[in-house]
Structures are given as C-alpha cells and as structure tokens.
Image 1 (cartoon, rainbow, N blue to C red):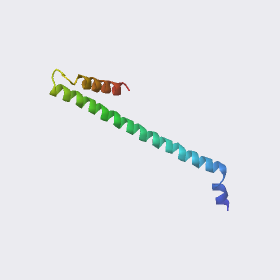
Image 2 (cartoon, helix red, strand yellow):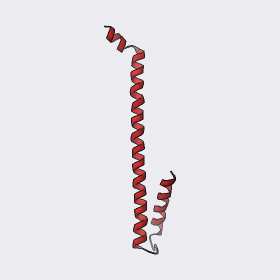
Image 3 (tube, rainbow, N blue to C red):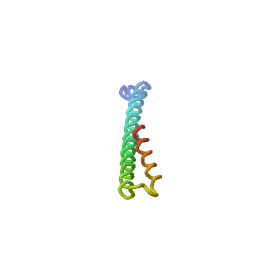
Image 4 (cartoon, rainbow, N blue to C red):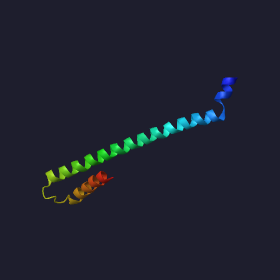
Length: 81
C-alpha cells in the first residue's frame, strides 16, 4: 500500500513524465539533426557530381548552363547554411 501511494503521488508522476519527455525530445532532435546532415551531404554530392558531369560532357557548357548554375547554387547554398 505504501509503495502504491508513493509511486502514484503527483510529484513522482510529474518527475517521471518530465524525465521521459526530456529524453524523448533530445532523441527526436538528434534524429532530425542527423537527417538534415545526411540530406546536406547528399545534396552536396549531387551538386558536385552534376558540375563534374556537365564540365566533362560539355566543355563549353552548351545547352546545360542552367543545370550547372542550379548545381552551383545548391552547393553554395548548402555550404552557407
């Protein structure tokens, strides 16, 4: 009976709830940060590979200048972010 009363006391319930919520938010923030870092790395890789492919396949950038500019904007945008 004493154990039931002490565990179900509102202060203990609040303490346990805040402990769970605090670490739940830390875990969620770590997941979102890792997802954003992976997306930045993927976008940087795609932008750099697009620049390399465009420069190798079309030396004067004929017809693909817009794609090269988009890739450069993606690279510099992700680096500045």
